[in-house]
Amino acid sequence: MRTGAAALAIVSLGCLLAACTHKDEVVAPPAVKPSRLSQEPLVPVQPQPIEPTTERAVPSGSASASGSPSPTGFSEAYVAFCNGRPSGEQVIAAVRRARPTLPAGSGVTIQKAPVCSGVWQYTILNVKDSEPMRVITKGAPTSLAVVTIGTDPCTVEVRATAPQAFLDAVECN
Image 1 (spheres, helix red, strand yellow):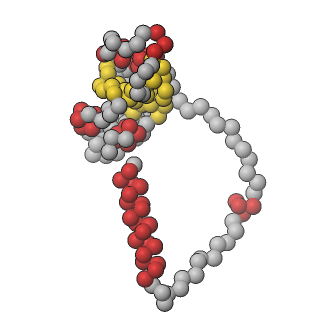
Image 2: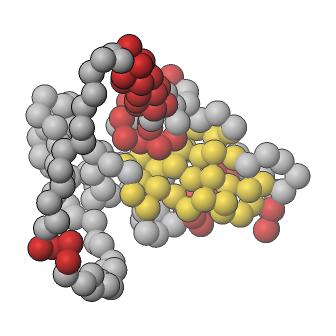
Image 3: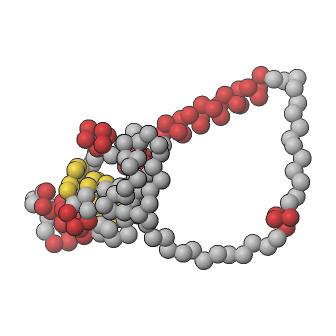
């Protein structure tokens, strides 16, 4: 994401500089004709819940171009809220198995609900008397494996094996 923003800034700056160097040339904006669609009233539409599909749009040439969906039903092409598959409580249970020293009871709460991409999940937890924990898990909701826990979850394993959309969402660029 940061790379895209930097590229956009460079292109914008280049366009601005190009416009400043051509003093003799005056370009009139194109005439815009009103369309019939712009004159029709807009009708509000009620949002409908979206169920994840088991089909995936996989770019050709990618490592997972076999077309088989991930066991979780989430595509690796994008990041979406997990909608309880896994739940925040399942992530906390997996973290407690990996780190039994976490505060018991209500010492750990969910700050940001899990988001999913393929079999990868990203959750932010609040820990009593500590900084928020960024947690990356992997696998089916009933058998989550903790990949990383901490303030910087972008380990070598995550950078090397997680889908690009997931890396962008977790800010591992």
